[in-house]
Length: 354
Image 1 (cartoon, rainbow, N blue to C red):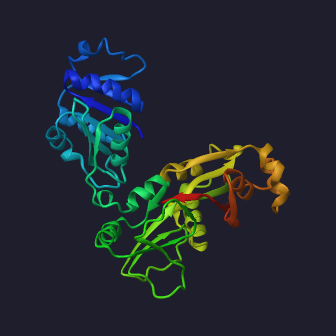
Image 2: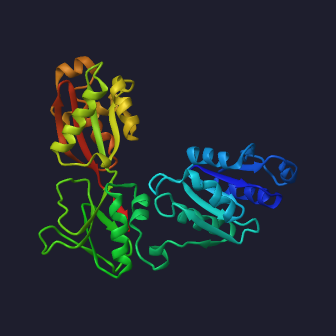
Image 3: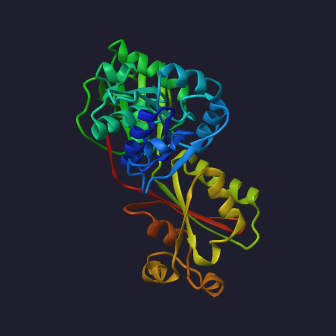
């Protein structure tokens, strides 16, 4: 999490240095406060001055940081952030501390943004009391959006978070189907569900990359683990649109969610191919470049092509790249060709902490 720590008073500025050091964050202090922190050991801490209108400055923070720690009165923070609040999926974590370091208040984006976790970390680092007000937390219930964030998952239908959480708060049973292994203390409010195991539950959570698990209950929340590695090769000059449509067709054919893509893997020859770079950028994916020497060690496991070897130096691209970029797991969709584009898919095997 990229954090900024903001202070407007001398005592707040001193605390901002301490917190910035603990979080590896940038400290923003009001212009004119520099003399008050010269003896506070600001070496190796990035310190910037707040110039101009504070509300406009807050907008800058919203655009450039994932976590914001304001050391000042809550009222100042509320009035300053109000114009920039969008929704829980996009807002940064906002925590407010008092300059005496008594409290760390999770003010905005407690679950998805991580403000609750940030407040707890500040408590561990400084001794401040974390103030958490989200209903599931104070009632000792599982927070499904926090579960998604902590396990690197995407929520497909965020509109179902509120009714599912409300069901938990009413004491209703929520069932969960998981394609993956779950680890941890299983909450009593969650019951595991197997397809075909009787009547479809009213409240359902699906943890899966598959898109063919039907939502037949009254409320179903889909959580998509980012666990799929896309191996890809293409002809030089393949257009952005052609590649995007090929991937969508490939994922639809294999009934896998685009939200579950974790990274794209390809060979060195294609690392600067425009359509691959643009697809990764558009979908927030890392591109992993696999050396030919690594592919050579496993290429006999796949059906290769001498024509491809002449062009690229290796007999296959999509399948071995997907396999090598996947830390552990299995090839779930073999090489598929779409007009000069080859694709394959691996699924990482790992445990998800509940």
